[in-house]
Image 1 (cartoon, rainbow, N blue to C red):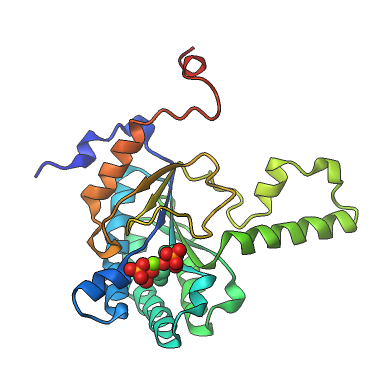
Image 2 (image 1 turned 90 degrees about the vertical axis):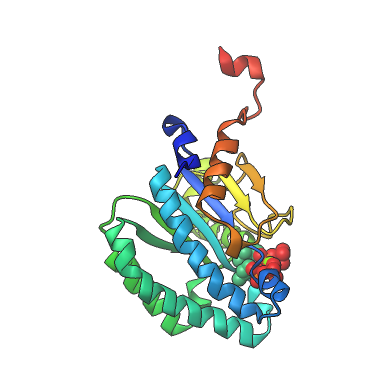
Length: 248
Ligand code: IPE
Ligand code: IPE
Ligand code: MG
């Protein structure tokens, strides 16, 4: 079967793809189902897109799974999502290892329920040796929380004389974020059609290419993911320069 994977230029694959996985609730509502049924279906898409990212040669895939603001959803939905994380991690860990995928997590660990956090930590330990794709789950994450934490750490170091205010530059700030050591996302995908960032990776997406698709997350598939990479490869990333400067 022909696949868009063959049309991807292997020399210019985005090193880091970040995805705002949106539209689970609307997907379920259109089918007169509970919102949580949309989240269950969304887990299958996570598996597919993790495979697709590995196959395309992406090094980092960051998935926005639960935001700081999502804690304010109805308790039944929050509970269902946290339970789903426990089940999904337990079920998927063997395949992550088989596919050489390392799991990482960014977000406020302290707010995560103990069982979910325990499973996540176990999976991170079990996949720590994997050298292929790094799958980063953003859980209880918001960029404002992350930046505030970084500012707090930097202020503490300055207060203790470990860091001079003159030495605080881009790199110093980046190294205090939860994504320290990762390249910034080259491509940011949002499913579900809304053209907003919803408190995701605000610092890191400064020069990311943005791709919004109306497709709800449960309907997003490998071919659409490859299509987003192909569209990304057609863009000219100028980073503030002129087109002429880039071709010199
Ligand atoms: C995204 O789907 C998943 C999470 C935020 C956990 P939504 O649940 O936001 O689905 P919509 O946007 O209401 O359709
Ligand atoms: C963004 O989706 C957060 C996640 C995908 C986890 P939301 O559904 O929470 O965002 P808004 O409310 O549409 O901005
Ligand atoms: Mg949503």
